[in-house]
Length: 121
Image 1 (cartoon, rainbow, N blue to C red):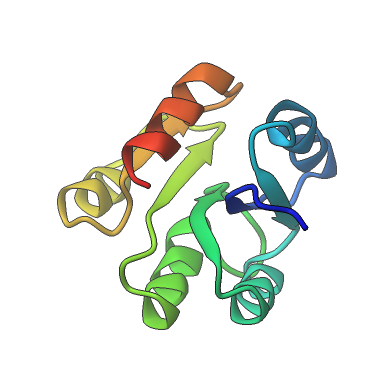
Image 2 (cartoon, rainbow, N blue to C red):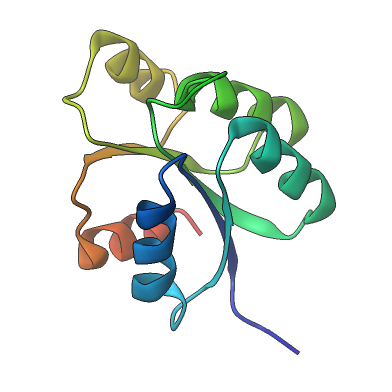
């Protein structure tokens, strides 16, 4: 039985999901998805997911669009954006409104992400 906290990481680049799993699988039960729609399917089938991290720039739907859909399913689920791009006004507004709890630019810092996750659990 896996008693680790489940987190979902969504990123369309396979190398990023692999690096995330390598860095966090000792701490968490990491589930990954390569699209927002796949992430939504996973969330619907894993109601015990406690934290969501998403890339911002993805095909079909971006990270904030994905997180808005996450919030329709589970409004109190903490979500953050991890992106290769600088923070935009849209991201700032999402933080200020509570849609996302934080934003970080890649490459990610394991310690900082772990602190963010623990702060919101």
